[in-house]
Length: 140
Length: 289
Image 1: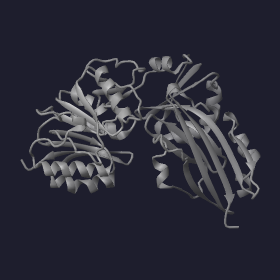
Image 2 (image 1 turned 90 degrees about the vertical axis):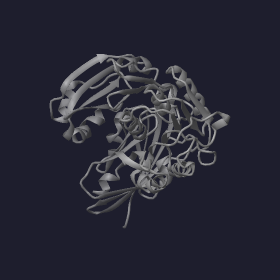
Image 3 (image 1 turned 45 degrees about the vertical axis):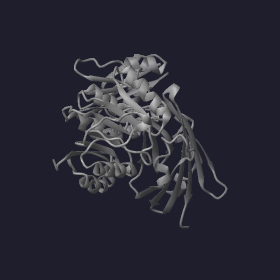
Image 4 (image 1 turned 30 degrees about the vertical axis):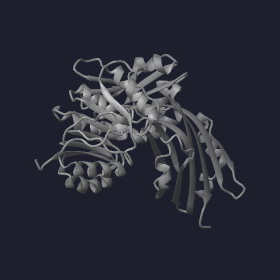
């Protein structure tokens, strides 16, 4: 199970429709990276970690809809630092939205560290997103 | 560019999107249609209906496919946009088409300057909904943290006057002034930092702002003791009159609850509250008259 969700080929294929890339990290983790341009009021898949979750973002003019859609029935926990909550609208901040996840898979937990950078292009009524996910087997 | 449009049962939407979204990388617009959700996706080469139905394993209802302009402004003018509040007020950008029916208060608001108030956020919509319940009174209104001027302009369009609005962001105030002219109303917009500067008051106070501002507004209302207005934004004369109604939002539900005692000390108690996606709004009215 953990071997599957940390498979780079599987991850790259899952998000191939939007050019998602994946590679193994030196410590054995998996990096999934994706970039998208999404129009206001459109819900778009940004990043897909097969067997774990899909990240959908819905940019609006003042808010950002963030959905980590679970793709398994295993217990999942997400948390975000408070500084992340207003990071989308505050143009004076360049810090990424940052989420930490824990997936309780049958053969052991997997941790997730998700970064989302955004740049709003009002002339195009759209938002550029760069999303990066690091997955690691935890607890042995 | 081509737009495809179809409907799904609302209670099966998320499961079906698990199968459909990987085939629709451009994403979907979701429009509530009672028990169904209408989805619209625009792409240069969208997948066929057969491909989507094979992935979803169900028939896609109301299928429609048509050529649409690549330019988003032209497309928006064709497909529509804007936010309708309470069935009576439409908030739209200059790029959106006007309402297709009569009797709608049509607010045309340019964006810019980092100003808040496009209607995409639930607090703006809830404030407007609470405002729609109230018959305009004498003595005017003030919009504290006015952003693009949305609530102030709406109040003026609904018959309140004189109306003022303040915001700490000069760029947003400049856009609000343009929006006031665009909507044919006279609103006295000025720059003020409500965490430091005097708080202008009026019989109707619209305050879509975070808790520190709410605390200052409640304190100012209490100090005014039901007398005339306090403070002058940017040297301009504020609307005069005792605070009779406060429409407060910009807070999460626990924050709104925490703000109530300070308003109660000013003789203002909640008569209606709304909640949307964790955000809350309340209309408070004077009870010590």
